[in-house]
Length: 83
Image (cartoon, rainbow, N blue to C red; front, side):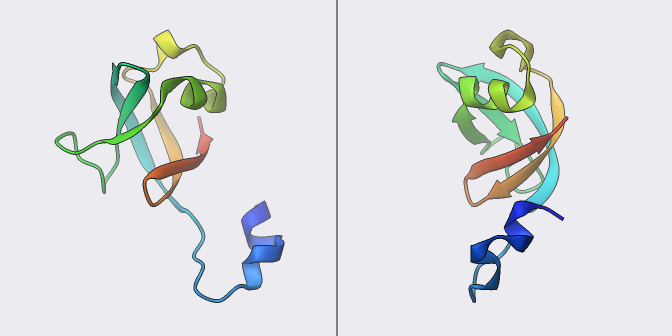
């Protein structure tokens, strides 16, 4: 169980937990990493700060392109990752 399920916001009505899905970093674009998921195709990827994503994954920014991982996606943000 994660913090979301047991935290103070868990009982609030209308709040859904982040959706876990497979993700892949297709490329770096300026300071952002373009991430594809089942809901964010390569034609409309999720753009997230590359430095933050690299820190979440525990790797260097240069290692991001091509990386596959599981991501907790909440709207247009990645809130957690699993390598």
